[in-house]
Length: 321
Image (cartoon, rainbow, N blue to C red; front, side, top):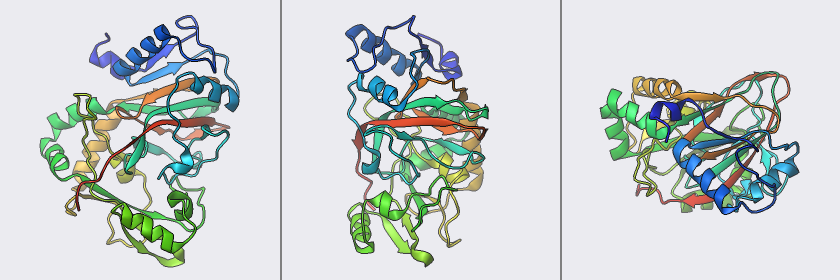
């Protein structure tokens, strides 16, 4: 097994010389065992050189793993994406100059994927890497450098606030409308759904919708015996757009007390100190353990097309308000 520092430095890389995989065919037991071991050790497995070029190739490749599909339309994500197949869609369509900060996919929601797949359909001319970060290592570093902050997160949890537009905003990493995000066709239906899930909400001008999550854990175990820094704190602190009302803070502890900005800055620094950038080559597929590894997107130039798929939805209950 690689050392902790080695596991931090890069994902496991699998090539056809290592494993013979046939897109669309179920994984053979030895291949499944090998991939499961690599994913457990590294949190990310990069498949390179498997002669994949289209969204259909990618879809077939995913099919061999046998994971349950998590349709993007069924998610509570607020990023703008476009489906290519039933399970393959475009990654976040924010403009090339927008940094997408580290996050666990949908960690600010009640249902999130266990695994993620990414596929490089077109590699960018410059930039555009996908940074990945092991959240178990982040938690170790944060516990050593800022134990009071970690204790507060563990005891109080966190609430996230964001604004959902009434019209799709492709210039934002959070540009999906509240109609799309909530899968509703009226304001009344939106209110009913948010209330049922324990969200707070307020209607703003231009029919925008400000929502705040229930109290959610920021540190999780997931029955694996190892705690992870599973949350959306980095992306929310560094990248989410400001709310329309300055009194509505994007992030608070679960008891509605404010989080010290210096704690958030240190947290962001610690996370990015633990990052490895996955530099894409055309045809690459990355399998990520979303319960262990954060990801993001570096700004880029030129054409870049990275497709995604979500697998094995996992649900949780929010802490009582």
